[in-house]
Length: 146
Image (tube, rainbow, N blue to C red):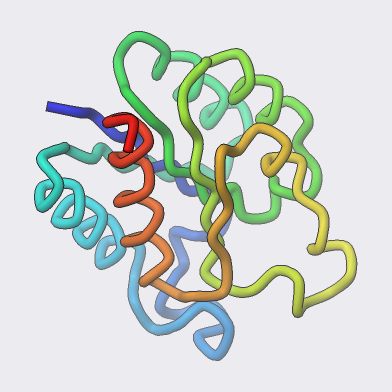
């Protein structure tokens, strides 16, 4: 069974209450459940982790090598600031799908650039929670070589 690590960055633990007009009303627990269900549909399993700490996310990325087959990551604000997360993703040597609930290209100019995109196989943004479904599906497809 393929293993997908789903990582969520800072402030995503506040989904459902934080700016619902941008991020929607679903909670992170809702999105985690959706990721697990999607993975199971495609013969995989998804383990979900969220942290507001850059170091904790980097630790999980480093631990993923040899334990997981792919990573789905919503780095949130770290998208635009974290060379360290980018480096960790490049070093883990796994397919990476970056996902964002909102369309980062339609928002503040500083959000248009993502360091994480430099390490990602693909990027999905602006589709709300559906983006996570597509990201998990894409991750499984990449692992299967489809």
